[in-house]
Length: 471
Image 1 (tube, rainbow, N blue to C red):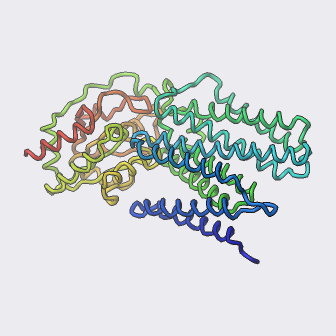
Image 2: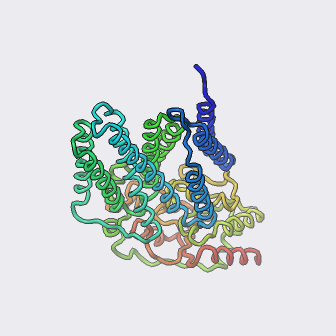
Image 3: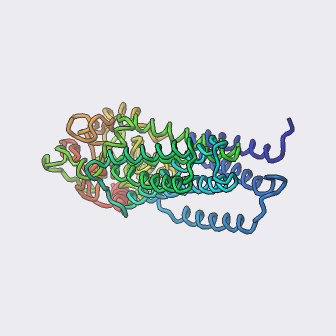
C-alpha cells in the first residue's frame, strides 16, 4: 500500500500529539511537550491546506484560510500573553468552548451538504448522519456549557437554580435524543427543521447543564466539558476520515474523562453527585456548618509570624485561589528561599482541586520557578503534617476545612482534605472571614492552634520577608 505525503504528515502529527501529551505529565518537559504537539498541529494544518485533494481538486481559497489563521493566531497570542494567572481557568474554559463550537459548525455544514447532495433522501447515509448528529449535540453542549462556566468563573454569571431544574435538564436531553433518533432513523421531510431544533435544544441544554453546578465544582466541570470537546472533534475525524483529527479528539476526550474521574475521586464524590449536587451553588451550600459563628478567631502579627517561621524546622505552605488573586507566587517563592537559607525545610502541600482548574496551583508555582519536587500531593503531605512546626495557608479554604471529616451535614462532608490541623501551628492568610467557594464557614479558623493573618497575600508575604530579614 502506497503512503501519500499527506498520510505520512498525518502520521507524524499523530505521533507528536501522543508524545506531547506524554511529556505534559512531567513538569520539566511540559513546555517542550506543548511545543512538540504544536509543531505536529502545524504540520497537520499545512499538509491539509496544500496536499489534501478531493475529486482531483485541492482546497483553494487560500486568502480566506490564511486570513482566518492570521486573525485567530493574533487574537489567541495576545489573549494568552495578557491573561493573568487568576483568569487562566476562564480562558481555558472559553478556548474549550471554541473547540465545541467548531465541532458543531462542522456538523451543520456537513448536514447541509448531505441534504442538498441527495435531495433530502439521506436514508442510504445513516451512519454519516449519526456522526453528524453526535458532533452537533456534543459540540453544542460543550460550547454552551463552557461559556456559562467562563461567565461563572469571572463573576459575570451567577448561580441560577430553580425547583425542578434537574428534571427539566433530563427532559431536554431525552427530547434531544428522541429527535436525533427520529431524524436518523426515518429522515422525515422536515429534516432540516428538526436538525436545527436539535441544535437549539442542545445549546439550551448546555446552558442549563452548567447553571446549577456550584463554583467549587468548576475544576471538574471544566475537565468534563474538555472531554466533550474531544469527543466532538473525534466525530469530525470520523466524518472526514481524517486520522490526525480523530487521534487528537480521542486523546483529548480520553484525557479529559480520566482527569474528571481522578478529580471526583479526590473529592470522594461521584460524577453524578457533582452534576446534581450544586456543591458551592449558593444557598444549597450554606448548610448548618456555616450557619452560625463557631467561636472567636485569634489574630497573629507579622513580627510574631516571622519569628515562628524563621525558627521552625519544617514549614509547609498551602496555596489556594487567594494566592492566585494576589499574584503572590513570586513573593511566596522568595519567602521559601529566605527560610531555606536559615535552615528551614520548606515544602508545598497541593490539594487536587485547589484553585479553579485542574493543576491550577502547580502551574501558578511553576511560573515562579518553584522546584517541582517541593510540591507534595495531598496523600504525601498529610503524612508530614504531624511533624510540621508551621503550616502557612495562603488563600485556601475549603480544601483545609475539617468539616469535611467531622460534620455530616456539611456539603463537603467526605471530601479528602489537607490535614493541616495536625501541625503544631497553623497560620491562615485571608483578606477577610468571608467563606470559600463552597459557601460555608471554616471550623479550622476557630481551632486553638490556628492564628489568622489578615491582608492581601502578596503584601503580607512581602512584609513578612522584610520582618524575617530584620531578625
